Length: 247
Length: 120
Image (cartoon, rainbow over all chains, first blue to last red; front, side, top):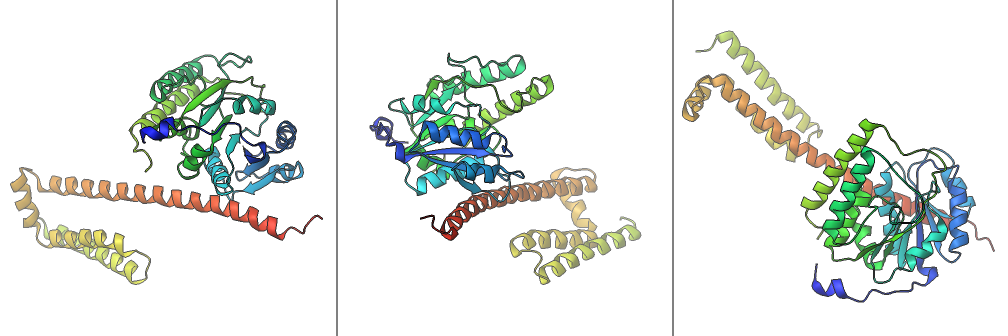
């Protein structure tokens, strides 16, 4: 990383036609159509790409009929792999920015505007815990997320209250980086990606967003699973710290 | 001196291992880069089976009282190295197949767009 890169002026105010919205989706046939329509209503000029991560249901068909581009991966790669494919597409087609939105409908497409409004950032995280909305987690999972948030904020030098948020905006320079080096391991796509971006001299910011209740599925509260989660968090952060930065 | 029967069994096993490696190589089922290490191990086993004194000598040299313990220690190190190497290769292959999957996804999308009849 070079000092000039850190302070280089970051291009603001993206042309909405240069925005790519990527929705990684695995068996989300019940929500994907609605989410695609919401995104298109909120950002009518943006390109919407659904990366179908090996779904066995009608996710791809419903996404396509809702008006999204659909990239079907031949087998399941996980969110990290799906997003890297999305970033690669965005990079190859010269998009100025890529927004990741979950296909399960927990993110409000209208909030993309909030992410776009943040100046001078390469990566903007839509944070669930930074003040707005009433998203809450309790017990060991909460401790794990606290620990993760503290450690990560320390590493990247800016407040990251919701490092595992899958709602983020990535500008051109970070798109180029992520197209090549997007970690695909568990938690890697959210946590390690931030460390990779920081090490490459990119600026990370967060903005509070309101989160909806998940339309299907619930976050786990089982103590054993929370403990495993905590362990994986520690491993993910530890690995991100000691791994060589991508050349 | 070890029992003659034991020597015979070790020699048979070692030669069988060498033969297996050679046969796999001959049938192009084993890549040359992996074959080298297995040939070295198989030949080494034959040598040690035929001349157990070598094992005894080396054990005395490094201060291991029971020669078989040297054998176990050596085997452990070799198996560790080989399985670590294989883990590394599997990781590499996984990364390559992931890249290919991403490329296939992108290319399929482009081909579909090209083949779709124009709307207007």
